[in-house]
Length: 221
Image 1 (cartoon, rainbow, N blue to C red):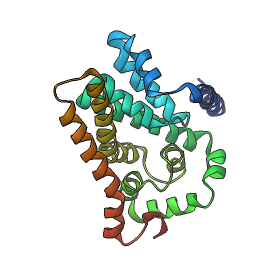
Image 2 (image 1 turned 180 degrees about the vertical axis):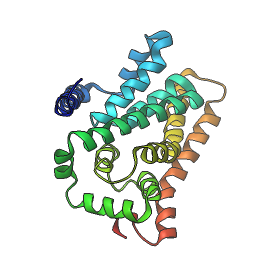
Image 3 (image 1 turned 45 degrees about the horizontal axis):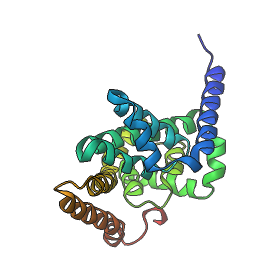
Image 4 (image 1 turned 180 degrees about the horizontal axis):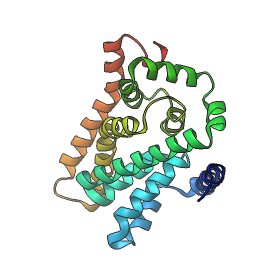
């Protein structure tokens, strides 16, 4: 049976490989390139998209590219579902990597913000995770790792993340879908475009609404 130290070494090696791969492909990552690649995979496109999204989250790649590509490839419904599964899977992997392997490195990257995150978790639990997803004071990919160093339970973290990432996923999936409709000249391209604009506007106003209700930034309270 593999020892705990051996598992830790394998985890560190796996995370390092994924991050290095992400750095190497960052300059070539685009919605067009991702869509073109996935289009050639046929029925495996959804599975590969989810796995790629999860790996991208671990490797600090921009999730927005994946989400918009998901909307263009799979439409509003399945694009949102696949994006949420991929984003939550990647967020969970990063959380586990921080908790069981790369905690020191994450602590150095987060600095003083780590103490504020822990204080927020101690004070509000899952509500604080929800707030940090809806009011992105810490970059998404770094937050995934940083929350792994807090005392929040994995199940609570994963479920809360899945639910509270839904508005952003839906909005940007619609952007990808509307763009695909506009290029294809679909009959509902105007409707798709208007829905995308409305969702993005709502998403942009959401942090301001939450701050006004709470009376300030959640991480500073």
